[in-house]
Length: 153
Image (cartoon, rainbow, N blue to C red; front, side):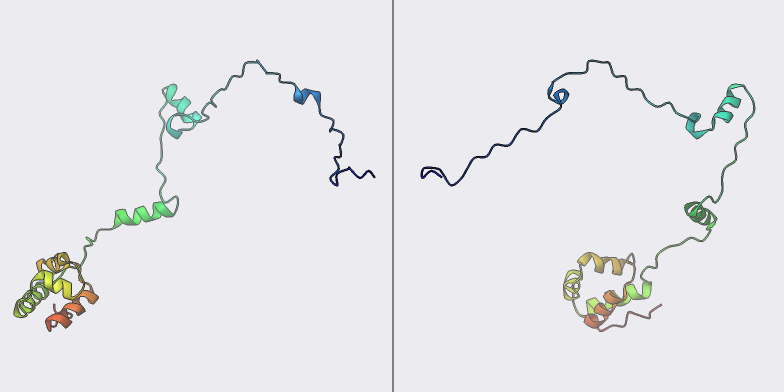
């Protein structure tokens, strides 16, 4: 060992043998043609046999499938439904009781709404009868106004 040699020693490894073809930069100038796959069925999902029959002028009968799956069963039930369904709205007695209780306490709709932590629009909807009654809101109004609202018909 020589005293001037560095502690880090360079080592050389033989280069890996590479395929000459990979290193050449050849370009492939052959023409590539992309084609779209031709549809297999007739028009709008009609099978080829029915489509061919139509072209020949023959009469073709089609049958609508009923109840093929879960969704079709649900749609059939909805079609057969005759009952008119609507949401329950605030009764006239409840509307009047809210208005009378609020006026007796000399509160505005906005003040009442603030006391029960709701928007003033909710109070307007209850007093106009457009709201869908919620027991939590009715109980808050009962507590503030001192009027019984739940159970009125």
